[in-house]
Figure (cartoon, helix red, strand yellow):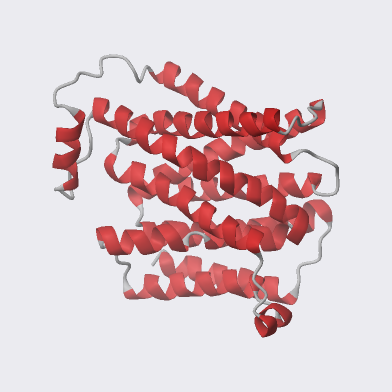
Amino acid sequence: MFYLFLATLCSASIALIFKYTENSDTNRYVITSANYFMAFFASLLMIFRKGLFVDLGIRTPFLEELGQVFSSDHVVLSQYGSVIWGVLIGSVAGLFFFLSFIFYQKSVKENGVGLSGTFAKLGILVPMVFSILLWKELPTLLQWVGIVISICSILIVNLSKVSSDRLDFNKTLILLFLFGGMAEFSTKIYQKYGLNDYKDVFLFMVFLIAFFISTYYTLKLKSKIVASDIWIGFAVGIPNLFSSYFLILALDSLKTSIVFPLYSAGSIVLINIGGWLLYKERISGRNKLAIVLTIIALVLINL
C-alpha cells in the first residue's frame, strides 16, 4: 500500500503544478517536451545505475518465450525478454502518455483542475475492465463494495445538474478519459508479463517516444520557447516519472481492480486538499462527500 500512496501523491502533484500555471500564458507543447526530457533522462540514469543491460543472457528467442508466458498464468519474461517487452510496450504507450498529457493541460485551462483530475482518474475503468476480462482479477465482495464506492466518489465530483440534463459531453474530457485509460493500461500490460526490476526500461521508452512526439509538434508549430515553460516541465517530469514507477510496484502486490480505483479516488482527494491548502480553493459539498466516500472505500478495500 505504501507504493500505491507514493504513486497517488506523485499523480496529485502533477495536477497541482498545472493549477499553478493555469492562469499564465504557457505553451503546453514546450512544457510537455521538457517534462518528458526530464522523465526519460532520469529513467536512463536509473538504468545505468542498476546495470540493467549487463549480462542479460539470451537463452530463448523472444517470440518463443513470449508464447510460453502468454500460455501460463505464473510465468514472466526473462531479463532479456523483459527488456524487449519494455521497449515494445513502452514505444506504443509513449503515444498514449503524450496525448493524455496534452489533453490534461488543455482540460485544466478549459475545465479547471478538479474536473480535469476527475476525468483523468476516471480512465481507471479501462485497465480495470480489461484486467477482469483478460486475467480474471476478481476482487472479494467487500472489495467490490469499496470499488463501487470509490467510482461513485469520482462521479459525484463530476456530475452537475446542467450537464446531466443536457447530456453535454465535453470532447476534451472524453479524450482525456480514453487516452489516460490506455496509458494506465499499458503500465499494467508491462507489469503483467515483465520483470519489475526492468520497469525502468519500459518507462525510459515511454518518455523517450513521448519526448520525440512532443518535440516534433513544438518545432512544427514553431512554438515560442521560454525558460519558465521549461522549468515548469522539469518540475512536472519527476512526479510524472515516479507516479508510473510506484504504480508498477503497487500492481505487483495488489490486484488491478483494487489499485486503480484507489489510485484514482485518492488522487482526487489529494488534489482537492492540496487546492484548499495551497490555493485557498473552497471544497464544495460534493467534493467533501466524495472525500468521505473515498475514505470508506479505502477501509473496505483494505479489509
